[in-house]
Length: 227
Image 1 (spheres, rainbow, N blue to C red):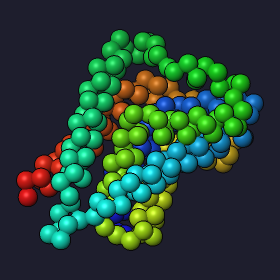
Image 2: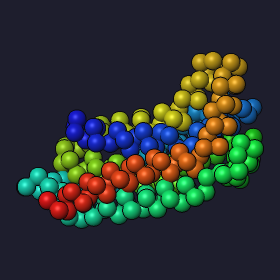
Image 3: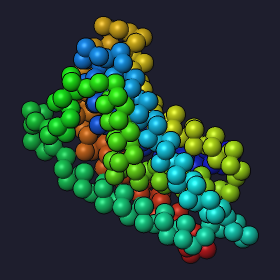
Image 4: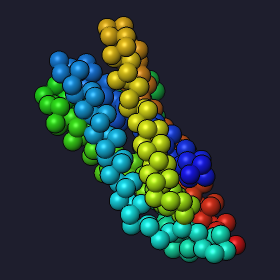
């Protein structure tokens, strides 16, 4: 179990630093339904991570190490494919980063302009969509779950490792919620500053995260395939 947890820490941090769900939850915490919508988005986000991770673990049930201690070739090929896809995501986001200085307006998803009308159910559904359907997060969750599966540990240990991954992945979105309930009105200035910084640096953050994890996946895959 320790091996599985150790190998998925970087994926959990990568998911936790996803800018859009952090921006989204900060926006919802500034609406009249903040006390229900903020936690609802957080729960949906964690649920989406858990659902995708569980599905990948079930599909990858036979991906444990071979008798020689090496993963099956198809597992290494999957790592290589995920690494290449994340590299493509990194390049795409880097090219989309703002280049016009501090005053350049950053394009945001349309749903961010409609958060005032969200119900808790809609906020939860948005959280699931952001974690399970966003290409960057989906690739990271698949990579993390596949890494857990390939360690060949027991089902119980894999479930614990996945739970650790979900908790780590929820830290970024959960931090504004905790600050809101802990600091109340005093959290407004802090959360506004976080939102503005995330908006400005969204593309660069995603690009760097994807690049680092792509390098890890591709390196591991090449090492396994050549050994």
